[in-house]
Length: 437
Image 1: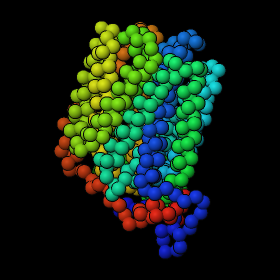
Image 2: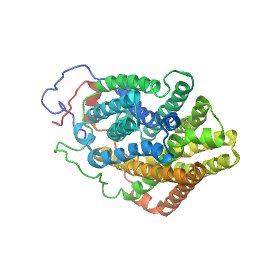
Image 3: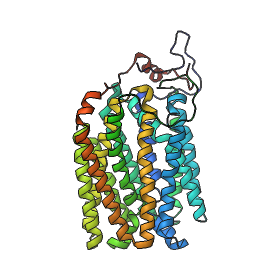
Image 4: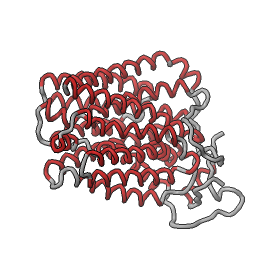
């Protein structure tokens, strides 16, 4: 049975110290802010890659390598520390991650050469690796009555906000403000510092399984969860694979292949991806997981077809349609996969399982980025984009296939949604404790 370990929730008097914690609703929105930061940090350099390439004469292999080092480090962190928030608490883990993100963004803000960019992306990867799973779990745990669909919807909307803000703000500052390769990172640095301060006031609790000592280990799956995890994993992996074309190559595609030289216009075009997946994350939350993933896979395939067409015809309007439709696909794939996991995983395993989910997604993201970067350098950007569109289409078809194949086993092995234990209310009434009792 799942239980929540809260210092002071036993028979002995609760200990209170330090600043008063935030209430449930405020804690929910701070946690959603940390989720938003994971996508904002990921997309922060999207509109500056082309400037780095021009100023420092970088190849596509190098620019996609800067992007790829980020998911590679995220994967490493998830492998080593995937379930750490189940032991030391969501708050503590998120604070460590936000601290690493601050260092990474600072390195970008002052970077004199490309080596600083690689170091900055590595720290960003550490930050997101530590915060992605815990922040997603915290959104569910701070949601009223553990509403899995609502939590998945808030998570998707927060990701959309973070991505759209990165692209719009980055595009505007890159095009019209001074210091185009520095100012947007100073703005992000200030925002993460504010978010770090807000996270400090989250309730100090461990919603997880254990007072046992934590040790590095691969994320593991509870017995009976493998069919649900397989489907959710391929769906979220397909969604995240869009990031290579949108965040790594999107600005260069818009400028070099579609023919739009304005960074703000290109950022706005790419932000349609975020806007559509944010809107769908809100209005589509009542969809059941499997229909959502099925529709998402279909929309994703259509978006990739439009993207290939926009490159062939150099059409900005087709490119806009491609980013919007791809955003629909991303949203439904991510929303369906996350809702499936949220409703199936018991609380004591949630941090580790969500980290395993992100592990597979970021691993594919890094691999695809390196492949497409090498192809773009050797054979041209157009071929790399078409290859990326083909890979995402194949992943979409694999998602549809798994939905059909696993329909029976998912019905047979579905686990009940976790319920709120009576001790869970303690963190929201002022009882705190960073360590298990």
